[in-house]
Length: 316
Image 1 (cartoon, rainbow, N blue to C red):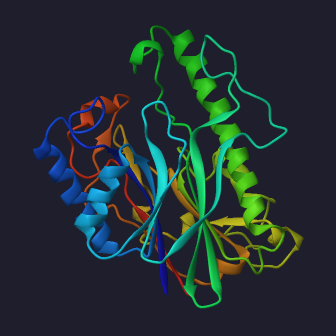
Image 2: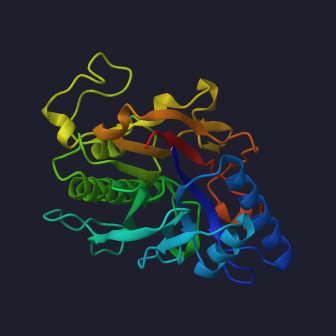
């Protein structure tokens, strides 16, 4: 059995900077809380998001205990946060992606322009060997946020026109990033999804039925819960299945609480080779998720994270 998970660690920085905890006490509380949650579900491979300082991730793996292998994207965003993977199993980096999948053109991302053809944060794919001769590819992403930011570091729009424009800019970029993630998945399954064990995890910043999330699934049809879910067809060569409907219990099918409402914006997707090897899927909401607002700065000293980790048990 291999446990694969994903978790947005929320501003994992060492203390004293602009974005992370202000002091050592708050930082140590955060590391302790994150480590306790991770030890609670004991992943073998965990995709992580919002790693600000690589050294802080080392502090976290030290606090978890045991031997961890770490890979981090070399393409952080403007705040310095990036995705990564920590694994109990030795890993090799298979792919790093930061440019939109060709021939996708640049998209406008603010009022100033011009457009950008780069993902807001790089995407990373690693390969592990759960058992001798068996390989598992794991891709991790953190797509453009739905929580809007405005010029000058503001989190509130000056007027409705600005709010609408920046909402559109974020959607343009998230859609382009979802298309790029789909391109990364294509390179991993390579037309052999029935045989290649591929998992795509991360913070998609949108719910399962959102258009951006649906882009990543690949060929339409066969979604879990539909009559054709496990009926073989030619789309299986590239298709990914979102395990959202496998999360049990049903009332825990969320990974963040925004203004009092639960949202499932973190996802685990698997290839055809794995869909019938899933032996459980959970969202770890039991540690008590806070309700977040449009201003992330208010949580800089908070322990733990504003996201719940998700994990799936795979029979490999």
